[in-house]
Image 1 (cartoon, rainbow, N blue to C red):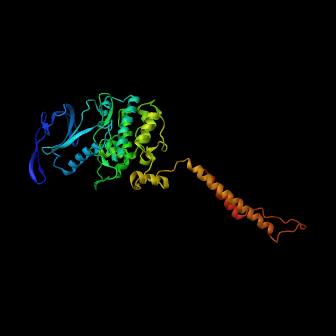
Image 2 (image 1 turned 45 degrees about the horizontal axis):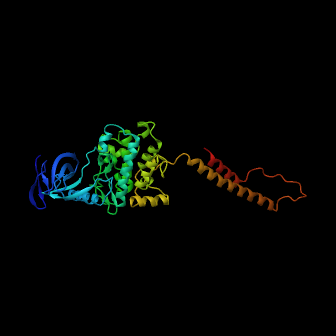
Image 3 (image 1 turned 90 degrees about the vertical axis):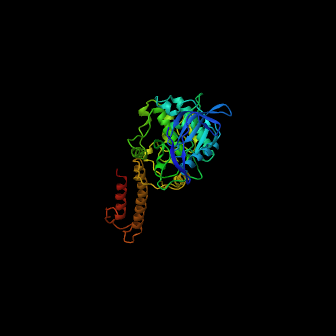
Length: 398
């Protein structure tokens, strides 16, 4: 491995990468690399003080000099340290060694969920079990004011007993302090990012739940719901919100599980589950979604004139989102109801006009008396009544 030179806050220095058998902070003897990401690598290590096996996450040397990246790495340590939960990877220690920030975590020798999915679709009950445990971890994080923002199979690790644990809070942020770059850059893997985040809205609890829905979709089908030859193609597919139905890829799948996945992946964030606990309840109970609209995420919009929906949008997104999509067409079923309502109003108008005309005729002094010979009445329908009837006919015409 070759060292990478970098300027460290004003003076030139050479940050050398750490290698196997190096001892970090005089305590952690490094072992083999077990994982690499865009920001760091993870190595096995031996804690010489406590005599146990751990995992050490080391920031890449070419990124160690970048303040923004270092801050994100340090945020991960602080975020994970705030959580103590059986379904969250535990953080034991953090620090900096020879210019390289590190995080010491529990070592999980089992595979990741991504490794399992690579072998094919998972058993339904296993999907439920893992999904519930991931949601339990998110419930704890959300209660602590943290949004994970990067839920994906590679960040779900399995212990030797099969327990699922959520890792990599490297881009987690406090729900009270969500910020975005001027360019609207999104952190996280694009395949699992919800459409509202692609539109520039801040991450929310519902964003994490959408990512869990994508994770479950992939676990039961063996493939991601949205594809694309390029990142732009994938983003476009997510924004269109038309994944191939789960049941086409896996016929006979439990309808209650399908319903949970579909609701979690609805394009409209305030139509998803309200919390990780609510979604976990739906998974464990094997029942249909607790709330939400008809399963048509492609036509669900991020805006609405309904006061209730506006309140929910403000709660989820922080402000009413701008909608740049085409106006959604009204369902055909609403037209007969609208026509019927118009017809009822016009019919009432017809009756009122008819009664008024008859009353006028009865009061007309030119009308013949009782002893007079009846005069010939004009058989034509009065003009106001005729117009009302025409309007009524037009309203109910299909």
